[in-house]
Image (tube, rainbow, N blue to C red; front, top):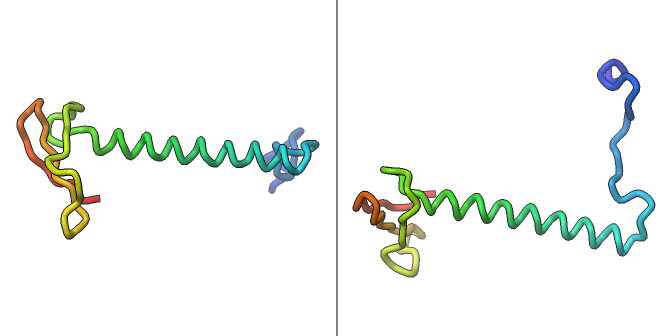
Length: 87
């Protein structure tokens, strides 16, 4: 079945670091890993920066540290709602 799905193509996985020195392959792999981490952080920041009530991004934490349950309270200056990040 694998041959049918890849007619005229490569049957095995492609190594994007083939032909590079081990040091260069490690450097490129590490860069790729950090790009993925950065993308995950941007997604998380965008998620907590939006008000669940009105969807705007005028959200600020009401205190600087999470409470004893590791939750943060936020205030939206757009709609005036307060909400707790429960994720």
